[in-house]
Image 1 (tube, helix red, strand yellow):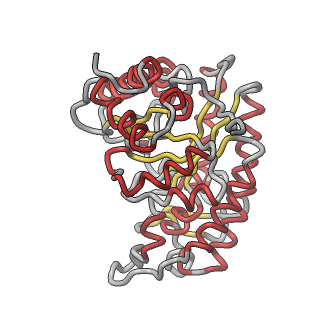
Image 2: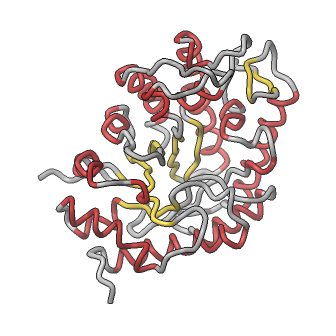
Length: 341
């Protein structure tokens, strides 16, 4: 059997999904750097308001896509305005903080960006319709995202030379896009489902644009995540919530892992009481046993994360969750077969 492709993190790594509580990016980065030394991430702080949200953060890196904040969310505009300038300013400030606090970091760094389908499902056109309803608008957004994300990664690489980049493309709306469940602005109807080949082509265009600059991950924390489609689209890792997986997901996950994909596995809840390290590790060990994979492969391929973002937690809870992720990852590195001794 040929060697599997290498992943850019060390065995027994943990990371976060993206969002953190609060409005102080430097404090959030200090927590991330302290609790997740092997694979820190650039935190998103949506509590700062419009421009720090998932859609606004993506728009900040898109060339030629002016937008503004409206009473119903982000909408395409005639020209860039203060809302987009604020989003760009917040992102630039976050990169300043990362350049200061992560200088000399010896390992990889994970960035996150809204995926093209989730962006199309949340951004409104000038006429008030969702961009998802217009094939031409989806095409334009896809091209802009491919260009903008490549430029964004180049900027991060310039600021943090020598740091390996992992880019997480967030697609929380993808299952709704595929199922025809995205509501129209009025809420009285649903937009038509998008066929899998079209989903794959659009996502693939974005992933192809960055694959030479970073290790591309696609995150989808919904039940029944479309793992096979994500891998066909070019994802070299997938990020899923272990709490919503069922045995029906095993085949797709097994095929992805056997092909060399990494797995960002949400083993800790984003809210609520934290399980013990032993209990948190059990779903990963059980998955591995069901798949029949070599135990030694688990800590190499799996990165332990929370199930989703931590914006809804308080700062102390968020710190504890990231700490428990790190402890669980190390537990799996020491005991990938999941013994409780």
